[in-house]
Length: 131
Image (cartoon, rainbow, N blue to C red; front, side, top):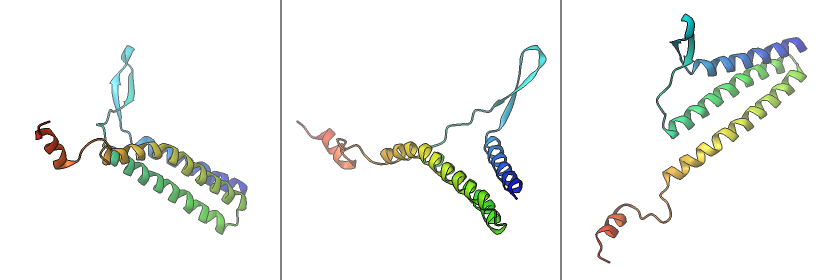
């Protein structure tokens, strides 16, 4: 029972890593001495909002996968596996928050005008108004 639980966790982790690697296509470039080396293709920059949305979607998919495995472990009454999955899910959520919080703050700040900056027509009126 213990081996089955550990195998499930190992497979889940390898699938998660494979999914992350698959998101970034590889491009071949010639290397010295006739060898070919694969490098990651440079992708165009994404908007911050799209990046945050994609990260949230990927996180939710990964957590859903782990929760399905946890459901199976619960049905098999593999208490240690369930506990390990709970810890893994908590750690993944914590790591995700550390990654997403700075991006979310930048996104929130970009959506609001600065306190000392006049809005809309007020800005135009300030430009035209004689001093």
